[in-house]
Image 1: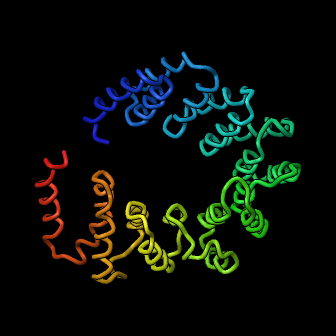
Image 2: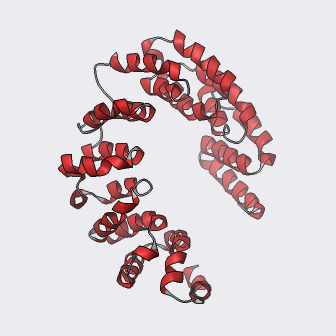
Image 3: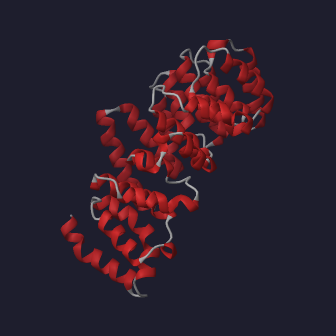
Length: 310
C-alpha cells in the first residue's frame, strides 16, 4: 500500500470509532501491520476492552508481530467461553513456534472433553502429529459428526477421505453441495468422482455460489466445463462476479475470439470498482486478442471516462 494512503485510512478509522469502537481498534491493527508507527496506539487503545476482545486484537497482529504471540496465547487460554477460545486458537496455531506448540500441547493434554472444540485438536495435530490419536478420540466421543472435522482430518491423512466424503454427502447445517464442494477445494482431484456419484454436484446443477467456491482449486482440465457452466447462469450480475473470480485461471491461448467477446459481454454487468479489480486479469486477453497498442488504448479510454465515473 502506498504510504500516502495511510493518513486517509487513519482518518477513516477515526470515523469508524464514532460508530463502533471495536471495529476502530481492528482497523488500527490492520494499519499497524502496514506501518508499525500505529502499533503503540493499538496497544494503548486495547486496554479499554475485555479479555476476549484483547485476545482477538492481539491474535490479529500475530502474522506481522510474532513478539505478541505469547501474550495472545496467554489471554486465549484463560478465556471461559469454549467457542471463543477455540476460534482464536485456530487463528493463532499457524503462528506458534516450537516452544509455544509444546506449551499448548501440555495444556491440551490436561483439558476435559468440553473445554475445546475437536477442530482445535485436529488443527493442532496438523502441526503436532502426536496429538492425532487424541483428536480422533475427541471426534468419536461426540454423538454427531461435523463435516469440517473430517475434511481437516483428511488433510492429515488420506485414510480419512472415504469417511469425509460420506459425512459431507449428508445434509447438516449447510446444503449437501456446499460441504462436498468444500471438500473438493482441498482435494480437487475428487471432483470428477463426486460428480459421478452425486447428481447435486453435476455441472448443470451448480449455482453461482458453488462455482465461486471452486474458482481457485479447480483442476486446469475442468476449467472449460466451468466456463461453459458460468455462461449458462441466468442472473447477469452473478454471472459477471463468478466469471471475474475465474479470470486469473483462464488462458487466452485456450480461448477463441468468440469466447473473448462473450467474456467482455458478461463482465459488462460488473459495477465500476469490480470491473477495475478484474482489469489486471484481462490484460493477457487484451494483449492476445488485440495488438501491441491495445493496453495503452484501454488506459487512455479509462482516463477519458474517469470524470464520468466520479
